[in-house]
Length: 181
Ligand code: PRP
Image 1 (spheres, rainbow, N blue to C red):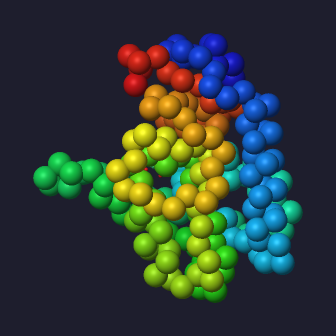
Image 2 (tube, rainbow, N blue to C red; image 1 turned 45 degrees about the horizontal axis):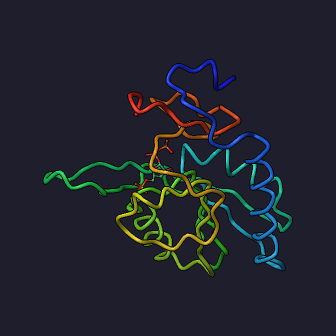
């Protein structure tokens, strides 16, 4: 799908080639850091699917994959950041080296919840790898060990990120015009 065919796209932020090159770099870092271990990639549905599979193909240590899904909403007072697990992992993670894989970290509420939840299951290690980091929106600080790209405070689509569930299948990451945000 060509990003230029999408109404509302302002410009391409990262090309397919840039994304591929950066994912290879991050995968090399992970392969080095987890040498001698088996890493379990835990993907957060749905956005992380494209990144997780691309990353996994370049990681050179044994790896397993599992997924969870979350729902997030505001509480009765209107405060954001209430997160629940909508679909849990298929298997336990006790004693495993878990790498939580996200497509994007914004406020950090989701990450804080997931890290607390997964840590309570006694993994051997627990770290975070995100495709995009929109750090300017962070409200809750959470440790992100690996990130592919820092992005500006703009609405982006592609490579797993959606607008009304569309455009996840773009090979690039594109910025939407402000009126589409
Ligand atoms: C995205 C992303 C994180 C969350 C981060 O999911 O995958 O789970 O938002 O936001 P936060 O840092 O402000 O908590 P999204 O709700 O877009 O769902 P999706 O992956 O199914 O598109």
